[in-house]
Image (cartoon, rainbow, N blue to C red; front, side, top):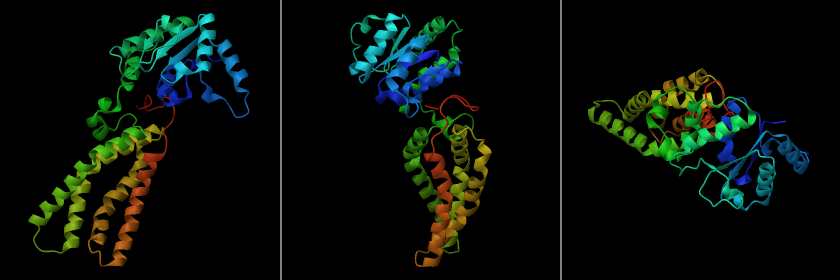
Length: 298
């Protein structure tokens, strides 16, 4: 049987994944109904898991406060004196559960790290095991804040350590896209103004080469951290990055003359070959829970 049973509303599944990962990183076994296999009698299975658990976390939210199943599971846990309630938003907790001390780990909570520490200590007492590492607790608490407020842009763009989620990668690209376009426009105009002789293809080729050099390290950092999220070494990104660095200039040269359809077609195929590997690492989900590169990214 699992050490910890988690009761929650299905709509909150993604929001409690970091909590599950935190608990599992302490060596505790956790049951939540996403682990049910096809064909399981889910009512019987859940009842058995709840009865066998040493601690039952009930996650209160605007979804779960109206769920009769969550209320029933909370009542069963309360009767066994293993109830550990938490809240992930500011919805009113239904009676009689609102009378029980509840850990507030919602993004709005000012002391979510302290509340989470007390939550883990309470679970440790129920399981008769040592409490979690305070640093891990603090890291988890920071992931409950708004993603806009917790992105460290310098870390995202220039650090090759750790993991990077799909959400943070795409959000970073959306936010930085205007900056990248402006940088590319500025580079092209500087080269055009200082270039003497040569044709349009040469100017575009030099502009692309300069832009690639400028953005090479951030590309390495983003790619490496996304590969870490799959539990893959960052060296797997060496081939597509090298291919991108060595072909971007030639690609720009091919696309410089839109009247030359043969060159344009070759340039577009080359662009597609460059885009596909990076699109894949931006779409494939990472490993769930901790891996050798660290805790799950926010």
